[in-house]
Image (tube, rainbow, N blue to C red):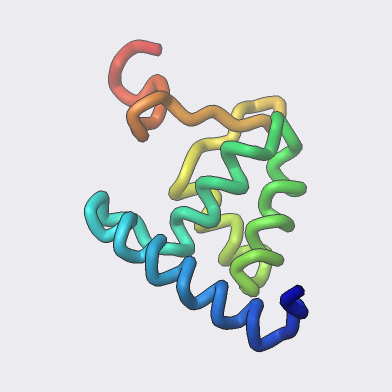
Length: 97
């Protein structure tokens, strides 16, 4: 049986980050962008301030920095939810929708 020590968790995180960096390099997305996008997409319609707090916590940044990061990933809907178009584009941007 393996003990889950801080050292094992640290090594695992480094290995996974190396894999993630390699995958993201092909599409020119940084790890912070991926984190913000993932938290935005999985928010399940949570209000923008809740998503911002999650991004700030995950990226270890203040709320204004998280808000800027959130705004770059996907625009908030008027009711506080989120939308991300398939294929990575912003839904409704210049296409009449």
